[in-house]
Image (tube, rainbow, N blue to C red; front, side, top):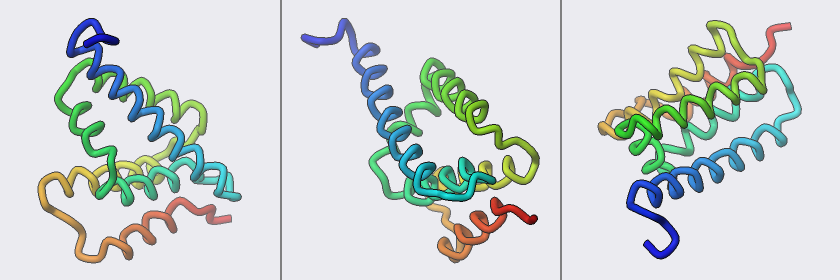
Length: 129
């Protein structure tokens, strides 16, 4: 507690650090994807599937149980949506499905064929033009 006034401040700092790491991982995927249409949602899907076995698990658990962190997470996510302008029912459905992957993992429930589901969700984000 030399650097933090209390346990809550320490927890908030850890959450922010993990969120910054997640942001960096998201940005790396965004910059590596040459196709603008669906880029944010593809990055989200990839991170959700990697997430299942990642160091960010505590970030998601903390945000589920702490109202302040849940609010911070929601604000961060909504800011990302505003930056990347990927609205519409298909992109939303893909992101919600990807969110279910890491949540399912917490409860020991995984898709029968994880790689096939990941590929299917990624395919849904691609332009139909």
